[in-house]
Structure formats: C-alpha cells, structure tokens
Length: 167
Image (tube, rainbow, N blue to C red; front, side, top):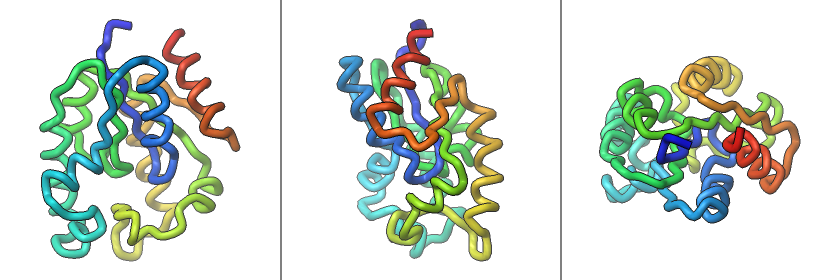
C-alpha cells in the first residue's frame, strides 16, 4: 500500500477507536484518537468544550487538532464531526487511506445513549436522523473504503477492514 496512514471516519459510536486500536496492533502501526488530541490540546473534555464555547468554536478547535496531526505509519480514529472540516480531512487524506465505518441509522440509535456526555456535535433542534443524513454524505465523499457494519462484531469489522485494505 502506497499510503502510510489509515484514517477511520464514521458516526459517533461506530467503533472507530475500538477497531482502530485493533487494526493498529494487527498491522504493527501506531494509534492516535483525534478526540484525545483535542482533549490534550485544550485540557478539557469534549462535552465541556462544546458546553462552554459552543459548537462552532469546538469545530474550529477540532480542525486545528486535525491539522496538527503529522504522522506516518499510524492509524487515526477521528471524532464523528471531523468531516465537517474540509481542510482537516484533506490534510489527513494526503497521506492516508480513509475508511468509513458505516452503521445503519437504527444501529446508531441503539449505540448512542448519551449524546451530551459523549461530546457529540449536534446542533440544537437537530435530530439524530438529520445528523445522520448530513454526515453520511460527507463520510462517503472522503472515504476511499466503506465498510458496512451490519450487526457485525468488532472482530468481524476488523476482518472486513483488513480484507478491504488487502484489495
């Protein structure tokens, strides 16, 4: 594979970090979670940043964090809202294969229990259905590979990812 990094994008709770860590171990790569990069840079939890500064400010901070990631041989799990940053996604895609972990809307609703505590970027009055519709288009726009999680276990998803990477 000519690209050096692997970047996971997808809805909150789609398994980007969990799958990413395992893929990194299997492939002997490093691992970064962009949400943790934000928390370390800002010295605050995601939900605190959103509550204190608002969504637009949070998205600017997230973009700055994405642009600060300059690595090789690394699996990067992005936050679900990373795709709102065209500059951030273009920066990451320069040296990576972008993998979209696609979950169904019903699956997402089952997995996402506490949006506020997770620090999910969702505008006031925006429904999960609206967020899903808006983000799905963006995830597909940036994805080199789409892995559909149809009731698959984490192990199954890792196998699907590895299979796609080999092809």
